[in-house]
Amino acid sequence: MKVFDFKIEKKLAKALGRAGVLTTPHGHIKTPAFVVVGTKATVKALTPEQVSSLGVQVVLANTYHLYLQPGDELIAKAGGLHKFMNWSLPTMTDSGGFQVFSLGAAYGKEISKVVSVTDPSLLISERSSVDDGVPRLATIGNDGVSFRSHIDGSLHYITPEKSIEIQHNLGADIIFAFDECTSPQENERYQEEALSRTHAWAKRSLKRHIELEQKKKLVTAKKMFSSDSHSSLKITSDTVVAQIAENTSSQLPQALFGIVQGGRSEKLRKKSAEIIGNMDFDGFGIGGSFAKEDMSTAVKWVNEILPEEKPRHLLGIGEPEDLFMGVENGVDLFDCVGPTRLARNGTLFTKNGKINILNAKFVDNFNPIEADCKCYTCSNYTLAYLSHLFRAKEMEAATLASIHNVYFITHLVDQMREAILNDKFFEFKKEFLKNYAK
Image 1 (cartoon, one colour):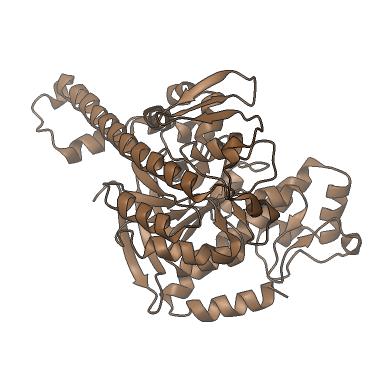
Image 2: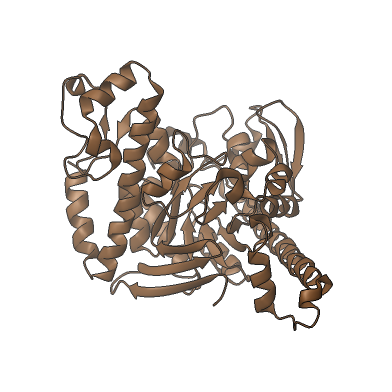
């Protein structure tokens, strides 16, 4: 069996969507799947045991944040991300490319990677926000990105090679090539320039990743040859992989995903999908800025071109309507901080739309968030209790709300998978969105 493998079990008849199984060194991921974000090697307000009890299959941590604190070398010394955070299931790390956006073009401004076409910020798209005179913590060059730590102001420089080295130290099952996530404000000229940079960085990321993977195999082979018990053993790639599996998580094989960029431009998105799709990546991420109204079109442009036999991950997307869109258009994995961030601010998902627990009507409502929800929160607590916790600013409020939101989104995507397998995806989508939009 391959250490990494992706098998498609069922395809939608009239769309790009599919259900599959992604194999990693730490287990199988049944796709489509929602990836819960644990930015600093922790899903905020939840323990790893709570996260896994919610049916979560995979957690994504943030390369930029872990590089700064506690440091990727310390995590490698601890045995890798899995051992460090006590998580036995698959993990992913992003490349740090999104922080280029948040510390650069978006720094100090209300700019999101997903905007509406009616957003006033898009009206200035004829000029580049790179030249807007606003101070920022990140500066982009063709070789890499220099940035100042948001923690202590110290200066750092990240290249594609450095990003891959950090991610190898962290030891996640799936890692991403270094890329530039552009602001939706950028003009076409800058988008094209950034895209060329992303493609060049993808080649360099892939080259360094291959070098480090070969180094892991050589180190393991040397250990095997130096052992008396293995002195006569014929070394094969399978035995090397088996031996690596006995070592720390940071020494296990890792899969590298390339990232497609291109903003809202059909020409650039398709160009990026062609170039990145022809590189020897294990899978692909779809990143960058979108307009809410045409996100589905952009995702479809990309997934019609990317190799069908490899998995696709839509970065930073987690609203229910967007998840349906992504699954229908061939996305296998999603990650987003939304479920936990909204939960900490008192916003809860329900089948009839989101609710704000701070609304007065919930103060004396002794029903659960949803009567048919099987999460721990809904099985044991009332809206009135949650309302009390949030109003009293108790820490447990974030925990109980996060349990519900993570369960809701995780199981919603699981239901999409089942609907694909049972030839009922479009009926399920129509019924859910009809009620959710009320």
